[in-house]
Image (cartoon, rainbow, N blue to C red; front, side, top):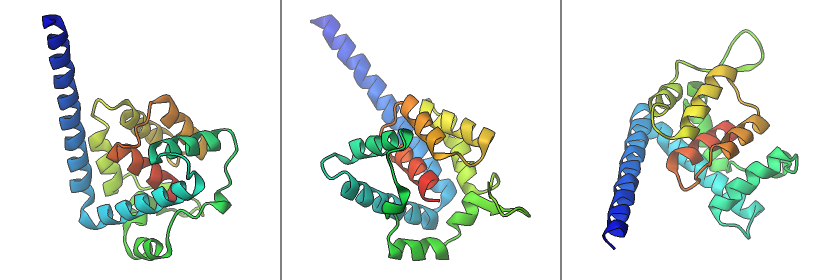
Length: 178
């Protein structure tokens, strides 16, 4: 009985430590990006959640995110049928500087990652956590720049995503929406 109590206490301390680290990552992410960008990101996540709920009404939101990733991975997803930004959010996004914080245009017609923007600074800050998904995303983004959808799906799925996790959800949504 005493051994079970020790194991339970040990697991509780691990869970508390994980939650504290996650809260610190969220706080750093929000502080670096600022209130205006966080508000836009939160709206994008809300719209994306709503679109997933319409696409997969029988699933919980966490399972809908997973199904979304699997469907893209097996070429069973059509983006043209997936309206994931509301008009009101799109207007706010257009008026904000969030897009230019994530991407920059060079002489080429291609969109390039803005590695000097606040979003990249926030990713850098949280990439030092114990969260393998955050580390791998930051490393892959640094290596490839804009991550193709299938590569992003593979990265998420192999790193055990938790879509109740504030940062996992926002990083995925920003990568798909932007």
